[in-house]
Every structure is written in structure tokens, then in C-alpha cells.
Length: 640
Image (cartoon, rainbow, N blue to C red; front, side, top):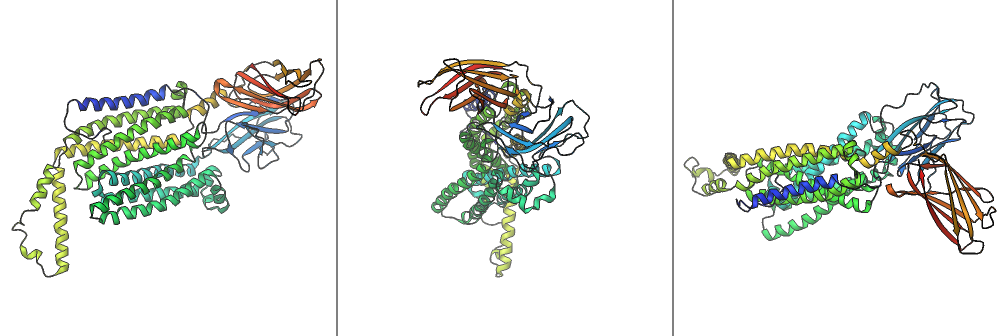
């Protein structure tokens, strides 16, 4: 429906102003998306490195294979499998070892000793912090590449028939939420008389049933969706218990509990509230239902925010409430639009005042959507290249285009709303108050049979309702509004589908970084050994010296790091504590902590230090020479 302020008359000034306001909101949304600044990655986890790297050829068999990720992940048995050229398992662990340190997320599996030369395949699968399953595979070779009988997995995690059904349930859940929340808000805010209308009751109840059924399906399929991909595992009690221990599982259970409260809300809305005739009592009950329903709706929306994109990455404490506002605004606008469509086509009683009140609600929803959408787009895209070069960015452009179309159609609805009157219905209501016609003899109303009298009363009410609906349908303004709202609803269905697709698509930030800066996804960047020399002074006795650092091969991927400390006399110097951290400030990556092991007096070393991206890295070195004397020095080095 129209996303402009309520109509106040056919003023030639207000119409251009309203159109200008719509255009300004749209332009702000589009340019807010396109001009958003770059920042750190968020949402879907991405593989940022491996040791050995993808395609690497090593001289001797490694003791273990490690994988590094851009953010926290959840792993289980067989999440990382290493297969030899014949397809047999080359690793010794069923569950990967957590090798994470500080902000570095790394998992590994030990390999059998004495592995022969040849090409080995590493297949991995995990669950990202935003609840979506991720997977991949790569190869490395020992000695020299060879033929391998292992076929890389063609199906991504979360795919197959289980993935299709799970995705259908996700779409249905969003649709049910929109109808439940939007329909209820339409009745309470725009058209209180709709509480007694059977079509409105059916719309809201069907929204509740759809959301409840979809949530149950997602809960049962969550284990096979993130694991085996087999429908039979939906009834695996151990798997279901493992799902309940995860963030997405807790969110789904919370949603079911809140839907129980929503059922009570619906019973009161279409029961006690619909029958209440005293205006003062009805006003008080309206306030109570609005508060209670708002709390339940916010809680249901939060079950998405707490388990998907908004719950991880940068500014999660801001992103989650923003996501809740975005979902509520979508429900108020699109759910109210569906309610208005049902009211215009299926009920004879909705008047122009209710339509204009929804116009105001739609306008407020669009304002909220524009503000929250700009923030979400900055957070998930963040660059021109990601906007046009990733699937997430392309879907986002499509979403903005659909919103533009929806607002354009809403402008026509706005014009029909301005012309809408209740005169024809009012004249019909007045005629109802006149004495009964000769076709309705007085003996009918005085029928001594109560059952027959009740039946005739029902028939008369049905005839009256049909007659009023026929008169309303004959109103050209109302017919034009119905056609315009129907067009809006058709666009809104596509918009809701695209929005749902966005929630399961890897954000542009992460996809771009994984494609352009991940050693396992592309050939390592060229580089050379890095040699640094930094003097230090902790201020205490024997607190002066020099730190020398070598990083080899000095490129993206796995590196060996050596640190030597010389005292003021030039001799090797031992210190109680030595720590390093690497930061790529231009991409907001790090600090990545490195804790080297002492090899000899004044000599420390760390192997498999992952450099995820080429750039000008700042290397911080913390040296402690006594219990109270410590200093941190830093120097920049070009790596990769």
C-alpha cells in the first residue's frame, strides 16, 4: 500500500511533496548502499588459509594438516578428512583439534606417519557462527603430484533434497511471520472492526500455523541439513540433542515458545476483543494487546537476529536490534498490505479511514526500512566491487530495484486512496434504516418459531452483506485501489523471496575476501623474506637490546618466524617473556597473536604463522626483561 502520509485532500502542493519524499527516501537508500565504506569481514566464515596450502608440493610428509578461518566455527566428527590418492583416510583424528590462539581460528588433524608420495585431498565441513553450513576441499602433494581416485565433493554443505526442504521452510517461516505480525498490527492500528471479519481471522491464524509448522520442520531437519543430508537423521534423538545445544537450535525452540504466547494473543484478539462493545473498555484492551503483541513480535523477530547474519561480525550488539527493527518494519508493511488486499476483496465493511491509517503505517515502515537497510548493507557489503561482483551484492541491487517498483505502484495506490469515499456505502446504510419493503412481510419478523426466525435473520444478514459488497465493488475508486494493491502484493511476494535469499547468501565482504585474499583459494602472493631490526629499552637494569626478526618466505600463507634478541653488549640475551602480534590496519585484520617457542639462548621460533592477505603489516613485539619492566615496540613490513 502507499508509503506516504495519510491523504488530507486533493491538494496540488501535497502530491509533489509526497512524491519528492518518496524519491528522497529511495535515493538515500540506493546511494547509502553504493557509497558504503569498506570494513572488516562479517557473517559467513571463510577459509583464510591452510598448511599445507592448496596446490602446495612439500618435500616430506607433514605431521598434521591445519585450516584457518575468518571467524569462529563449530566442528564435529569428520569435519576435516584427509584422503590419500587411493581414497583411504590419511588422518588419525575423527574430531579436529582446536588450535586457535587469540583471534586466530585454526583447526587441525594429525596424519599417519610414513605417508607415501602423491596427491592428497582435504575435505572439510563446518557450521559458521551465523548458523549456515560451509564446506570445501583442496589438494596438496607430497614429493610430486600424482593421479588420485578421490573426487572432490560437488555438493555444498546444506544442499541436496534436505537443503531444498529446509530452504522452503525458511521461506515459509518468513511469510508466516509477515502475515501473523502484519495482520495483527493491521487490525489493532488500522481497522479494529476487522477483528470480527472472518477473512481477517483466517489470514492471521494461517500466518501463525505456517510459522509454527515451518519452525518445527527446521528444528527437525537442522541436524541432517548441517550434517549427513539424509532425511532419516531428522529423527535421530542424539542429533536433535546436539542441535538444541547450538545457537540456531536454541533460537528455534525459543520461537516455538513465543508462538505459544502468540496463540493466546490471537485468541484474545479475535475472541474477547472482537466481542467487546464498550468503547472505553475496548480502548484499554487495545492498548494491552498492542503492548503484549509488540513484545511477542519483537521476541520472534529476535530469534532470527540472534542466530543469523546480525549475530556475528562487526558491531553485533548494534546489528541485532537493527535487524529486529528491520524485520518488524517488513512485517508491518508487507503483512499490512496482504491484510488490506484481503479486506478489499473479501469484506464489504472496510472504509476509507482504515485505508488512510495504513498509508501512514506504510510510510513509517519505509522510513525504518531505509535507515536499517543502509546500515545492514554497509555491514554486509562495504565496497563497490562487492556490490557488483558478488551474489549477495547483486541480490541487494535487485532488492533495491524491487523496492523502487513497489514504491512506484504505491504512489498509484496513494492516488486511489485520495479519491476513496464511503458515500455509496453510507447511502446504502441509510436505506437499511428505512421501513422494510413489501417483499419482507411483517409476519417474517414475528414468526413464532425461534429457530426459523434465527435462520431468516441469518439469511437477511447475508443478503445485506452481499448487497453492500456489490455496491462497494461497483465503486470505480475502490476497484482501482484493489487492482493497485494487488499489483503491490505481487511485487511484495517477490521482494520477500529475495530478502529471504539474502539471509542465506554469503555476504559480499566475506566472499570477496575469500576469493581475493585467501591462500587456499588462489596462488600465494609473491614475496620475499622479511628482515627487521628494532632496538628496545624497558627502562630497567639490563633492559636495553635489539630485536631481530626473520619471516620466511614472507608471503601470504604459511610462514616461519624467527626472533633473536641481542643485549647492549651484542651477545644473545634471554628474556622472561616475548610476544608478537601482526596487524593489517588497512583491512582491519588483527591483531593476530604469535607466541614463539624458545629454541636457544636469545633465539625464539614459530612455525606455520598464517598471513591471510598481502599488505603493509604492523608487527608489534612485547619484551619483558623483569617482573615490572616491559615495553612494546612496532615496525611495519611489506609482506606478500
